[in-house]
Image 1 (tube, rainbow over the protein chains, first blue to last red):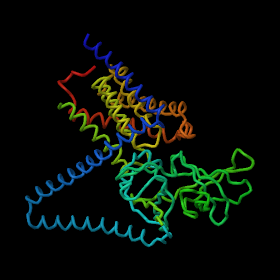
Image 2 (tube, helix red, strand yellow):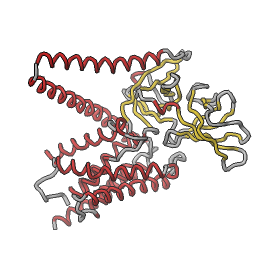
Image 3 (cartoon, each protein chain N blue to C red):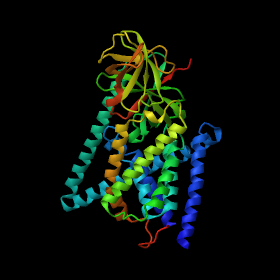
Image 4 (cartoon, rainbow over the protein chains, first blue to last red):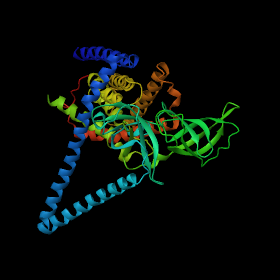
Length: 277
Length: 169
């Protein structure tokens, strides 16, 4: 009897939750749903960040306790000093690496009237790494929607187009990457002046479309942002063509291009903020 | 109260696992869907209500950060929690083969539902056909392979279980 009652409640709750979900989907562009979305974001983002910090602190705490117990078995003073030096060395290595990365970023040619805002990637779902990410800087740092986001290509130390900000909150912002399937940017083949489009495919490859069928495009050609882009600066590197294939249309062919930021391991991005006059 | 705290703790743990640690251990963007495994585990061990409520909460959180259609994961995780609690309650969840098969089917249902919703509500031209079959099938297989490990850990932790044998079903 009790089981039957539970099952009945389960069905009712399921229908209610499903209706709420369908309401979210159907009304995703309406103000009430956006309001709910922002509300949940404002609650969950700081909570998850704090929880992450606590978890990391717990890990550090556990390491320290373990180290102290071990040192008591041996020579306490000697082991303690050894541990401190190891910790310092670890910190030095990470700081040194960070310093090198930042130095490389600072050596980049400065684009006139642009302020570089360096931001860290707070988090992102790993199976959607080519779709979106959340930055740890937001409106309080001068960021706003539609700003271009660039990452460093480790091989040749150049800033390459990575995405744009689509949602800005006080201390965080959401970036949609150029590899997201909802992204399309106008590009051109470097030094050849052939205009085409780069469409995202939720992977590290971009689909380059609308290449004239008689155009001389081959694997290894670099693609850069064209002057038609409203978000990125003209000439900003995007990727390199890996494969060219004849399209379904007789007038155009398509190609696949690998994005430059694929090997970016810094977990850092640069937001290019136009300087106000 | 203790149960609520346990659920909140697990909510944070799985959010951490899915959103923060993925960047260190994913291979070519292929990463198991721990949240899906947890929702199915709840469905099998705790019954429909807990599974679908946690599924709803996880889905909503993921949707807020994702660029996909808002609400898509809310619906899918809720539905999977319900289906797992409704139809899989008679399976022996302690058998590794059963765990893999159930998670495999749950994951398949998840992606099919994903595609169906994209088909019904096309979002700026980003439709179901843009999913890579290879990528989706790898994710399904990897998720199914990780299921026994997650089930084992959850069984060992045992923090959301009442007296043995009592569930919310």
